[in-house]
Length: 137
Image (cartoon, rainbow, N blue to C red; front, side, top):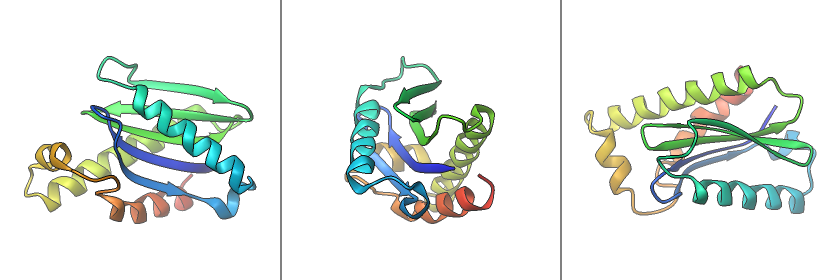
């Protein structure tokens, strides 16, 4: 089960999309806040020289991220969650995110990404994240 999914710009760590499944997580609000804070710290530390794919343990949970075309896709799962499945999920949301940005910006998704000036600028993509998370993963 995917407990949290973030999409962020790598150059500055700015969150573009955030999605959480608080109903199924079983974690307290304080615990979830701690993991959200850790996720933001991970995103701030990444740059274009960071590993393209990585998993980072944090207690009973693991952060998994994938960087593609200047965007980081990060998800939080329990330790037993299959890595192959989470990285397939991250790859699928990466493809869909870029396709949606390109569609909405007449193919110029890179400019839209580079000029996003506020956090959660593409929050409407959260609906796609929610559907994909509950449907397949």
